[in-house]
Length: 546
Image (spheres, rainbow, N blue to C red):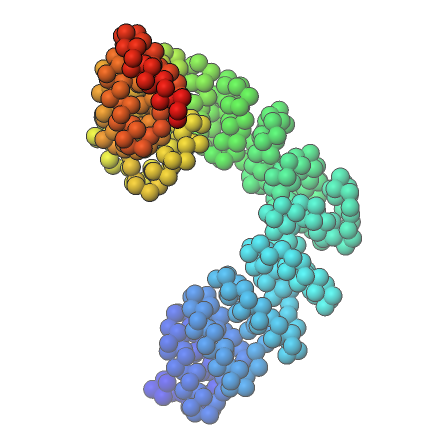
């Protein structure tokens, strides 16, 4: 500093120099200069401290700002509203709301009146933290102190109450913003606006439109859009998107299309969110022709559909039985540079399966692997189910082995909850769920059970027994294992293979399994079938004594 020509009397120049150093990110030097000033007997003023604190906060050095603030007070320099507001805003942004509130209370107690920015920063922080009641209390305090809220304050309150599901309260705040009075009838909120009222901006309208739509009050949301346009506030794409999504979610597709057309007239091209909402509703209503038109419109407007939209479209076409069109669309998406993911492939494979085109589904499985998209558990489950339905049990067994030996090992760590993909019997099977959670056993046990049952129904008991042995290698003590045992005991007994049935029976009871009543009955019938009456009577007696 001395080299720069600084003399002890040049306090203002040194203060400015400290601020300049902060503005270029040299905070350490700025703090050193402040300490040098103090060593020379000159205490920096509030403005110098405030500006350095502001620069520290903007650089996310909140801890340093806090220490400098404490030093400022220790040196007898009184913080002003700007100093407090800078700190309150910065601490709110990093989630330290209680500390921010402590400073707020401190400034009020010290006679420093918060301004609209101070109040708004803290109100917004409370709302983000879902502490709506505290935000309301602070807002009422703000009004009682004569501090007039601005459009940012009102918008934060409206948005916060909407996100908290308090749509009526949000509408009341909107009414107070415009008329300085509360209106209790939600239908009257958007009819007339006081000429002297504050003017909501596009963000205010957008927050309330979105909130109304999420509360399924789409009629009121549409009225608000009309009031917005009448007031000269031009809706943006976010506002249009919220209303389109709202109409779609309540099934009002025609109204959604009208708003969609209005949005295009305003010069806004649709984005993937808007088109996704519209197309999702079209799929649900099975209006595939219209969905294809929306897709064409997207491509015309250079709005590239994402993989989610393409996948929903492919799935919708498949569910409508239009698998050829779905496959063409899948090829087209690749040409457009949007590559199918595992969900896309699975939807297409499922479509082929439902259309009886199993071979095409199997071919697609090979294609996806060659293109670097590994099948997941759902892909295999879908294909295995379809193969079972048409009796291709050998192919099912082959797929099952492929899944456990190749692809599945790469994904097993992330699929502890994969059991949820099965039918209700398995979802409700707590024993199986516990087994997956505790032992990290392969979640292919239910598939083995399903395939084993399919072999049993087809009368291929040797294949079922072989599969049962494979199942035992995964887990011998499981609901699936015992269930398959009972099914095999019954089937073997019916065809007179009593010895094999009793071997399974002995194996199961030795492992702690409890045979079903029907298994006992079938064992007795099996013994009678092969003329083993004495053994049948003995088993019958032992069953009665159980």
